[in-house]
Image 1 (cartoon, rainbow, N blue to C red):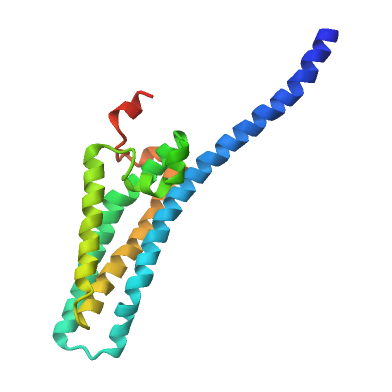
Image 2: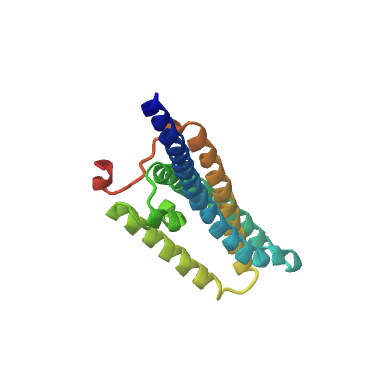
Length: 199
């Protein structure tokens, strides 16, 4: 009886500590997922915020037929090339899968830089890093070049980019839901280093 009481005396605090640790680990997993994905959405929304004014300013700019054709083409093309092919088919599902991987394999440094992790800048295959950095540099170069265009051409191009980025935000939200509800539905690779699979 004495032994049992001692075991109970030591067991209760131990169980409480174990539950606390388990709860903390669960919270860290949730934090890593939502911080990673919300960080990406914030970056995209900030870009939309910066680009949208020039697109909205088109309403105060007299447009000729050529401008209207270019505007419609810009929006449709960017919706397909950037919004659908770039985000929906590639970037968004991979970012969601990487966020899910991070939630299952949390590391402090990866959690801190979760948005960069989900975008493929860190703890990724060499090919994924090259693609991520190359794509980022291309976008930055495009944005810098567009800044020197006069209206209405700058607004026309910005309008297309805003449409693509907006669809990108919705794509990310969609794949967040899919990965959280049924991860098996997203078959795209997380592109983590080969050694990570053996850990």
